Length: 318
Image (cartoon, rainbow, N blue to C red; front, side, top):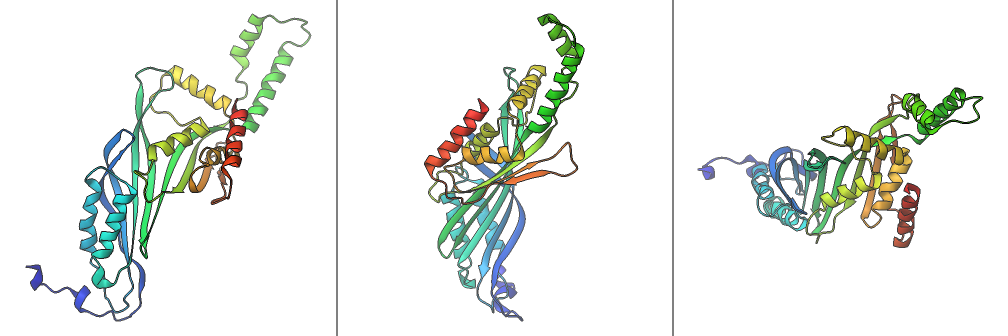
């Protein structure tokens, strides 16, 4: 039946003739199979799919061809660079009559992971990690990049020092003139006055992107997220009881960090990744503006130097 229907994208000639870098669709809703490291789920994804249109006289591409090819994303054994490369090559092949030689995909979704509480056995909750994948085949060459966003807590070292000074001065004032103070007296005073001043903390975000090898078995999403959370040490929690909240407070107190510290920690923890880019945002509770830091992308750091940076971070933490 379709053979009898007109297709102006084939038979009409563009009135203004010029090649176009990318043409396609944006914001396509699709189920997405993610399988890696024991993780196996179907997630809701938003897809952007484009091919180039190099022939200036061609009026338009075939959107429906691209749309139907995307079904492969919800089938089989999940995402992998090789699978996406095949999809991109199929997109190009489907538009051979348009002269297309390039294709690209942007895939955005939230990776849902169950996380255990810090202390309470058997207690856990779901945590969402926004992910974006960008893959392309341009002139036969494949490139892939993954970006994840990890949320954590950051406690300001400056406000911690100022808070300690207030508590110290309060203690000196309370026991001025006394030659000796018993442990019980100290404990009682601290239980009432130790929070005369408290450091300010804020929810914070790490946006980390890196290049993915074409022959990788998967995108390593869970491993990447775990390495970022282990670097900052204070990822936000899901289900908690009071003991877990106390443990989280201890983690914050033991890992005071400026936005610069967080960016350097993450960069050091991911020293072995290709074309790493780190952007860190601390959503300030003291100010109406945010504090941000960017690690230098593509910085030529040797493996030995990177390991030294990582060891320095460990020493500071201990």
